[in-house]
Image 1 (spheres, rainbow, N blue to C red):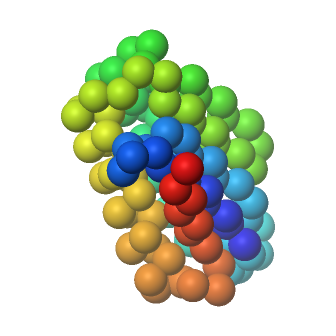
Image 2 (image 1 turned 90 degrees about the vertical axis):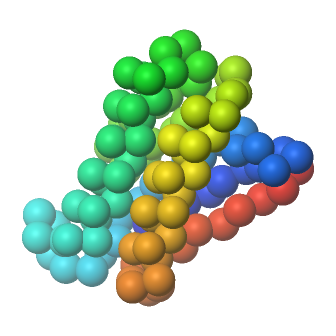
Length: 104
């Protein structure tokens, strides 16, 4: 299962961690994993290109970790867009992806 952990503080996204495998199909043919990967990498690329030095981004096998260092409206909009896309996948494949939002 893909696990998405979102941490918010005062309604602002502070961090986003995406890890795991969807296991919706055999390795290399899993469209749920492919969709999550595309959203995750696209989100990281958008932050790198449009909001340089505002986030600490780590990408490794089975993990995308984004920690917001300096937030503004555009960064929150980019992050929220990615979260909405992930929630859309979760609605269709609830056995393969779980999103947890924690407010601190």
